[in-house]
Length: 293
Ligand code: GTP
Image 1 (spheres, rainbow, N blue to C red):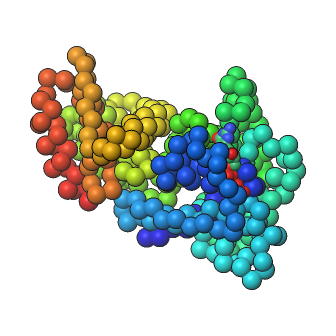
Image 2 (image 1 turned 30 degrees about the horizontal axis):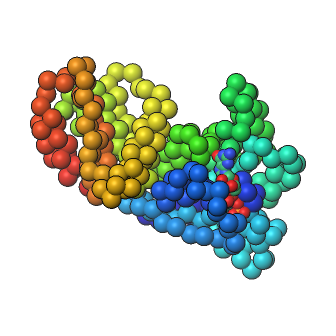
């Protein structure tokens, strides 16, 4: 099931940087050398449940409806499953930002009225830490108002921390055709092996796509942090020309395992009884993986 996702926003807002960090394993510092995107760059990413994200990174200088040649306008905005619109939080011209955003929404309303809308208030690292909540709340309120009659979901993001993974996990989970079933299967698996926590990740992006926590649900922020740590770890492995296979961390209170699960997922399993032998848990993970293919 192919779903088209438009990545739009003004030139320099950070679209290609976030795409490179999330989908091409690029380091945040390497995005400084990216050139402007001319026209549209497309990429495909496969997720469980047969979902293929067809990501259209639309260069800010050319892709807005009013700047796009009339013959192509319909094509860009047709059959869109989601619009991910990136705003540079440091932008000075809020009026122009609002105008360009609304011109995209009008085109979406005409050509793909069922598309989901996500707004990323990006480069939040440039805002003083104690001001971030306030700045984001203000922007979110403005964006909700500007989006009417459509509904938008807003995230704060920066390529320099894990917020980017949280936002993109949120986008992907909304588009997964079998998200509920995946959560239900994951919690059955976790209960059978008596795990404390289980997190399912897509294996190339390390985006979290399903989560089980015994008892209370943990804040999503934990998953974002683990995505970030695992990606950094995998990049370090690559530098040593070693492929990441699995990881085990244990102390006297718990044992945690991160390993390949299915052909396109990895799993993190946390066991609160560290006396259970690692081999037993690893066999359970390996056997369960077949049921998730
Ligand atoms: P076009 O291709 O012209 O549409 O621009 P774009 O939206 O793709 O912007 P691009 O990704 O090329 O980023 C422009 C600049 O913003 C680069 O120098 C990035 O390093 C920087 N940048 C991207 N994301 C962030 C962020 O979260 N924080 C900060 N401080 N800088 C960022």
